[in-house]
Image 1 (cartoon, rainbow, N blue to C red):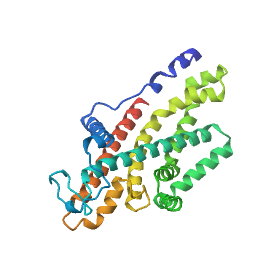
Image 2 (image 1 turned 45 degrees about the vertical axis):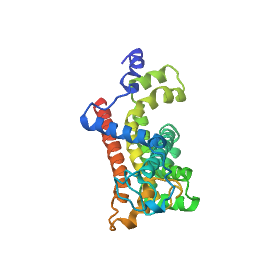
Image 3 (image 1 turned 45 degrees about the horizontal axis):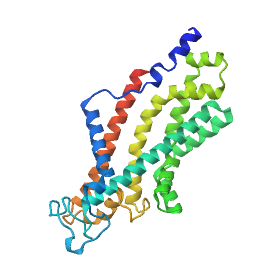
Image 4 (image 1 turned 180 degrees about the horizontal axis):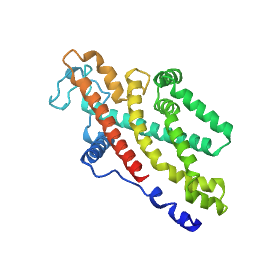
Length: 288
């Protein structure tokens, strides 16, 4: 293949954002996430009740009660306010932790693919070893030792979830070496850093984007699990996992809604994210 043709082809389909096909399930998932994100972000506009304020005169109200559309818990805290403000925390931690996971994974994957053999071997061995560990136990240990805070939860998730991203990025970057546009760029005298940032890395991003989307759901689920176990976000900050932890003892007391509401929010969010991630992965597979 002529060098000029190879260079002209390099951006082509690789840098063009490919959106999932307009299937009803995909757009339904996008709509659900958009509604959840907008409702969580606009929580102060949707309710003027404090999610932490207790009201002994309005304890354990059922959904549909005047002034409390979703009811209250045993301390009289409004469940709608707690659900909306909890979504702000859970979605924020999930998205931030997923971003940390992707950045760390891509950086280590690039170092393994482009660095010396000993560095490649070290990164892949560490990744394989960590994948063999019960990572939830590791996250629990980190959160318990470092203390519960949003920063600790984000770092704990990122430090224990980078391995799949790194291995995929490493494999894709290594495969880029045989691409025509990479060979042409090398023959034109571009430095390894220029080849990586201008050609190899953009070419490897589409498959990484698919696994990155799954990491969002994984991060949200992990944060909810940590909060449910009491080592996640601080108790004075509502989160979906915290709502579950507070309501678990009331599941068989008739107050099923205190468990069902946050559980439904977590399940719907993760299912929607996975639907979109699967669609992105399918589109990238057909494109390649």
